[in-house]
Length: 628
Image (cartoon, rainbow, N blue to C red; front, side, top):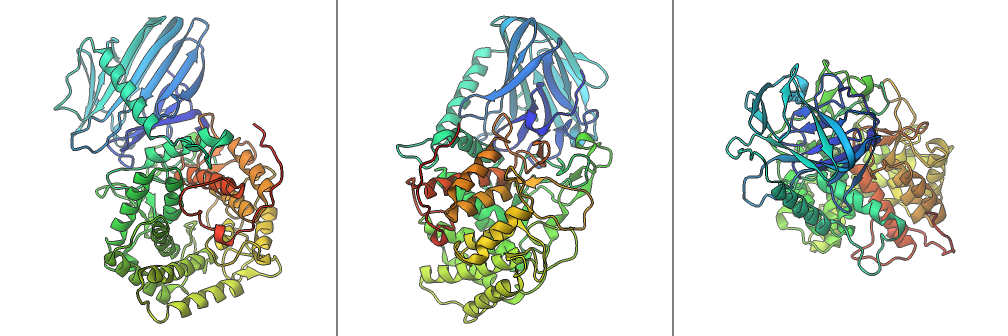
């Protein structure tokens, strides 16, 4: 069975709230790490289609295929059409609810013949530890065992299996209404007892229970809904993606499910995103709250609180953390893997963890401040940490750092970093007023100093725009966040000039936006960043330019994968997805942009308005229709 590299948009994702699996439209599981999302892979064909390992089931004859989720779930169905018949594979993983019982890490594959008769082939080729290690294979009654050191995989099925050249293979026939199950369990020595023949009724009961779980969890519209219209299903899908990337035990949300999917095919900008970034905090909480996933929002805030309490000094705080404490982030290059479509190097871990990025303190305090707007009190202990953070910012705000984009070059005075330092002090002052307590005497003075520096050194009069770093002429999409954070109102000429500069210098005809275009010390190119396109949508909506905002928003949605999934970037020439997938920040941006558009159109909503509306320009209502 040949396993070719597939375009990223031809993958779907399933998961159990501990880890995820990417399944191609050809029925091949090409990426999966166990036991956790950031653990070593057992299938990594997406990073090396020959060596990486996969678990594929597909027709022997020529076929076409399409994928779809069972409505409002993370249960994926891949349907194959052949000249002889039609078959559907239903893939799912029961979720880990951390209910005190030992969870079985299990992946189910239900193969059902819909019509005709069809012959299928199976290729089960696990490779442990990022494809370094080939397991030992042993056939047993009811399936096979694959083991390496302390790791074991159990494949349970009624289909006769063969061991062939370090993989398990099989071919089998199916006719209409016939179903066959493949059950894959990880490290369940104490619980593994394959039924032969297996009880398919029990498996179908698990499928029905999981379908009910996801459909009960998924965002629903109630009466007047801010997220209704044609976007509702897309937004609900974004919520389901975020749920898969979240860990309910720690509350953290991974930036993406993968590592080393390139920002440009064949390039070297390949990073590991299977960790939780602090800078996503406020945006994530806002999106989850308005999707009415209150528990997930509170879990995420619990993670934030655990982070700020880990270090005795503010400088101990890292920009990212593993979803589980025992997992490492140290960056390594796996030179033996070819990389996705020959895009090397393949990296695990992320060296940016040790970078100095001053924006994270503003993100942390802003997230905490937002929870007060949602009605949550701030403990005295948390307030002590906030005071330490703000005092620290007062000391270091005027130093250089690496910035939000984690540029691996010389530190600079990045405008976005200064903006978030200003946010840290500003929100600290607001929280103090909320708690009716005193602040350090120099907070207001420092806040004014930072504001003056941004306005004088961060604004280029010739370009009529804020720029990437002090006294530079580089346009950067992060400057769109200046009014959103409250430094200036949206009707300020400098803000509107910045929006125009971003649209002129960084935006494509479709409304896709690059982060920046100046040199950053790394070779090669990159695609347009989806979060930046959503920031532009937000800025236009909050500037009263709603028709422009909707136009760009719809254009971006048309470039989603067929399953409604987004990566980090899009190739502006081909429309193909680029970068790690699916990307939490992109889906968070989508949800928040829908919120801004909905509220700007006068839709009702629960709780406080999202950030930025206090400084927005009201939209003069006009009659317009959104094309479906």
